[in-house]
Image (cartoon, rainbow, N blue to C red; front, side):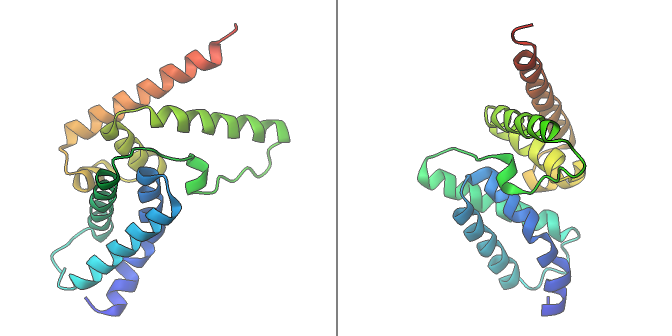
Length: 169
């Protein structure tokens, strides 16, 4: 892989890699370190012509490095969904913006309560927009496991959100 290939195939994914690492680690600095380590690993493995989906391969490296960091520190925490990316609220009233922000905060809190696999699958599909095949490749799961984990994660978040919103009625 030459510099031009690296710039066209790998660098466009750096923001997704950062958000994914940030979701797993909960720390901006650690996420930046993991993305940098990922870029170095990809660059050092320059004979990667056989890699069909470079972004998915980079996501897998990011996941593995992030999990290694978590294991070494023996901690598990994530941060707000809104810290990882900017949600645009153009054309909404202040009340609607506040409602949306509160809903996102609740969803983020509910996602942190999910088991690791469900949280990772839901983040990759619903936040990052990856296809099922890419998620299979990134998390090294088969298609049925991805679909089951996503279904269970969405249902758990939906049920808890309904309970929270129905409180007091």
